[in-house]
Amino acid sequence: MSSPVPSLGAIASALIAMSSFCWSATAAEVTFTSIGMDQESFESHTGMWFRPDQGTGVQAAAVPTRVWATKESVTGGVALKCVFDKGATGKFALEKADYPPGSAGITFYAKASRPMKAVVNNVSADVGTDWTKVDFAWDKIGTTADKPNLGWQFVVTFQGPFDERAWVIIDRLGVESPSFDPAPTLDKQTGPDQTISTADITAGVEHLAKTVARLKAKQPFKIIALGDSVTAGAQIKRSSWGVKDNETVGLLYFSQLARLLEKQFAYQGITPVQHGHGGWTAKQGLGVVDAEVVAEAGPDDLVILEFGANDMGWAKIAPADWKATVKQLIDRVKTKTDQIIVLSPTVGGDIPKHAADITTLLMQLSQEEKVAVVDITKLSMYRGEPFAWALLANQFHPDILGHLVMAEAIEPLLTGRPRTYPE
Image (cartoon, rainbow, N blue to C red; front, side, top):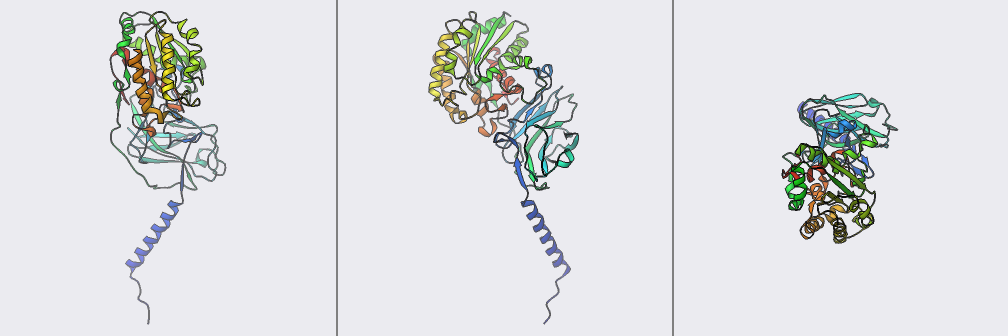
């Protein structure tokens, strides 16, 4: 008895099914690896290490490129929103020397406020106003798949010129192996990002009345910052290598604050003074506070105290003990001036798990010691740890943009004009 002959429709259906199976199997074999530095990838620490090039020192003072973590993503997690104002270079760099051998190349998803081009090693790709998968094959950008090498950093430029504000969102930055996946599984997220007001992270404005009076009277004074490596300026030039070493102090948070205040109150005469010590705790700060702050401050000069990352980091000091030591610093500073602002630490290490305690203790310091405070920790952590890294060059250390945001968080204590982040 002969077997029935299948219809043409059945044959076509079978071929389509086989084709789909083969494509799915091939796609499933593609491996995506997010790239980053020191075990901190773009996916786990979105924005860290992958920093905007703000240009020369003069250009960087205007901070023409801003970035923040956004939930508008293709990964169901966190992406990086990059906003370009006039003068922006459109350039981002990530220090990265090693890539998986046998991989296809660099890949990422992007969407922009207007069509633009992404350029890597003089090779361009289109980015549209909807999510676009951008692939740069190794052989197209000047290297080989068996030994991928882009030098000591990966650089991508979104082409301007930026005569008016534009933006691009970047997500799923990494490499694919052994070939590019034409249609990876995505989990798109949309909707506005949660914001935070500086009113929610500051306290003690009433304790800065003397400084406000000086500003309104356009009188000169000093802003003296005593702190750890953040105040010392560690990593501030990350990706902005055109900034000269002697220009970095003018880009640190206390110098940016002086510039913001001079602009707001329309005069010059605020002198920023730097006393930053890499790796130091508040206890170590006690050893120099008399020489570096008390001896240098005039009556009613403004003092900013910035410690905590090393206290609760390598020193493994409990948050309550950090508070107690900062109280001792405050007592010493008050022998010369009571115009004091205490900052909580930037994030890194164990700081995220201590964030709630840090906020509570910081507000207690304001009430008990009658000083102003700014909760930099909460500014980073208010949406959760996955969103906390976009202001940092590496763990703990802000780049130029991060220092500006710190200054903008402090400024409302003295202007009475709250800011919202992200703006």
